Length: 526
Image (cartoon, rainbow, N blue to C red):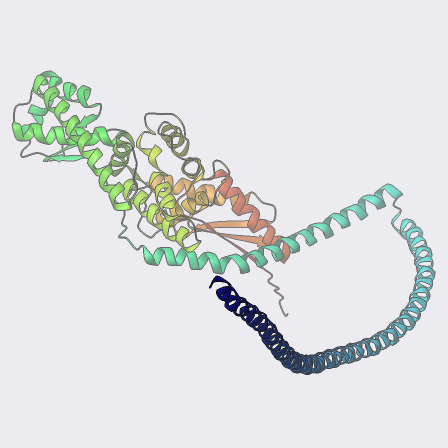
């Protein structure tokens, strides 16, 4: 049984092996077939990719060729444009060069013509110089001959002839100098008169204040003549006490109802006037009461002066002044110059100076300050020696005023040279304010002396026959000898007279010098 089973099992195994081998073979064959198919597919895919790559490469090459062609065309166009531009610039440059060449050719021709003209003129000048040399020699010979003849005729030696010649030259130089002075004065007058007239006229028109001559007389009205005896007191003790306390003189004369107070200081005179009025109103007139009232009045007047100075500073818009300076300004309200109130005069000068400074483009505030303070020295000129410009300058130095203000105060009458434009403006405004009709007055004695001095100065010049002061001393008429003074010398004499008047005289405003030269020929037919 087992052997049968073994016999039956062997073919089965063989069959299984055979089947396995066949399976392996079939699998190998199938794998080869699949491998060949896949290889073929891969080859076909590779071939297709190669063809696609070739087509893309061809497209890229064609696109690159097209871009290169377009770029080449664009570059060619740019190059062509640049070439055309360069050609046009070269053409323009060539045209300009051609024009320059033509101009240079014309200039060269002109230079040649000028050279030829200069050569001809040089030849003519040489000829003229030669002729002049010859004429000079002839003239020298003629002059020498004439000198010899003149010496023979006049019997003059060489020294006398030289003196005569020098005299003639001096007269000719004097004549030429007078002519030159007249011409220069005329030119300066033409250029300066118009502008100065405009500035001064504008200043006067813009500031036209009332201006009349003030008469400051310190008189006190009394109710009756019996009051005069009370003022004098027993044996004059009341009036002596009053004069000692106030520093003024009291004049009690036969004039009914009036007592006169006299003194050099206007402030003291005002204190005395107010004190006297208060004493008369009070009725208690005795030395102790007088001293008490005078002391109180001095305080009141000092406060009044300060307030007047402050009002003047406010009116002129001048700031930063010390109370002492303001008090002096207030004192100017009781001071007169030729009858003109000095404070009102100072205020007017301040505004006139400011207007002229504005016209000239200067600082109006500085001009107003200088004009207001220019006569500050007159408030204390009776107490301090010197001229009022110097006194005012020294006083203002204590309060650190600027150099411009100090120079304007010191130099508004020409005592020192001006170092800024405000000083002559203050001087001009001072003259304008002082020279107005009715602004100032003089005493009869001083007026007569001024007229005599004017005529004396004018008559001191050679060739002057007579001189007359007219127009209340505002003008001097001078008559000269027409045979001794010619027209040119007359101008010089008039100017010398004006300069001498300025140097030797003090006067308000200005003085006109009018010189007359006249030739009268008289014959009688018989």
